[in-house]
Length: 294
Image (cartoon, rainbow, N blue to C red; front, top):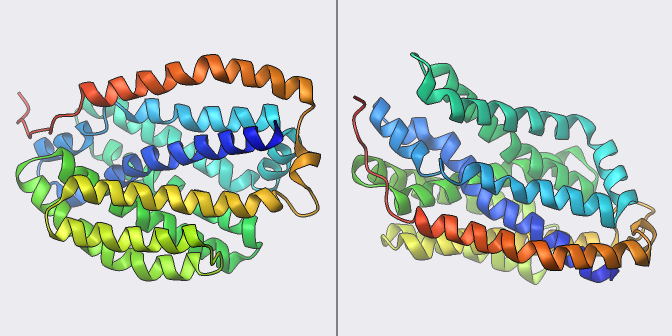
């Protein structure tokens, strides 16, 4: 049961990083690929129907950690209280910007909030997990730079997949630039892991850059998503042996009765969440076009 719940928590974090990864990227890049209010709205509408649903993965992952591994949860969120607080502030600011942008006369402050609220969590999640693994400020900076760059690439590829016209062309240019940046950063950040998933993640990022250059947006998005999956797998392989200094996974886990009850709850609830999210993405699968206001 302990291993089952560790795998489930890794799955939930993976889903969060894959889905929120392109949300963060779009939020950071919308002003870069847009030259008018209509284009800015076009960019943000690609994530409009899904961004809040994607955050459910974070809530579920943290809740599962709290219930299944309370000592691990307490240790992580106590040790990284400040960056986690900043992440929450960023998510709140981004949410306010996305919700209020169409309701105010001058949306520039909302756009700034979306950029900051996307970039801050994108950087800090990488810094937190890198510091958790390696315990150094340098590793945290490298991890943060890596996740920031990956989110930018993931978001740019998503924009090429979901938009039309000038925004799509600019997003493709940004994606190729981000790909050139992310590969050396990935080598720096993932070289300490040295596992097969980490090496495969680097290959996936390189493949995504080549695919976007060949205008294969769907395959490029699959490659960036796969690279995030593989990176998260590499991280959780390391955490399986040592979730916190001086703490084993068995010591961090709840009792068998609690884990059994959680398993029944997860067995009932998780399929509904997956089906609902899949249906949402299917409904909003078409490209978004720029429509002038008024």
